[in-house]
Length: 64
Picture 1 (cartoon, rainbow, N blue to C red):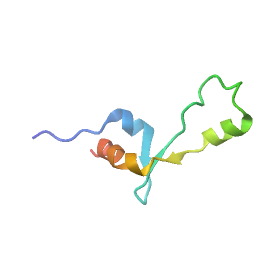
Picture 2 (spheres, rainbow, N blue to C red):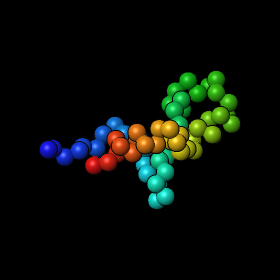
Picture 3 (cartoon, one colour):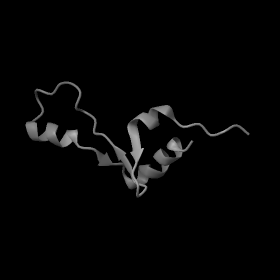
């Protein structure tokens, strides 16, 4: 049986923390920034955690 391959798209977008949680970056911060408030753009800079319902699926894609 062949080895399980890491989903390369997911590997570029997600990182697993030391405690096993999955981090992700926010979307909507690459263009059309003039209509977004400064506070909104500042919030989008920070990374956040993947929701509990999606964590299992993301970890499955990341396993090599």
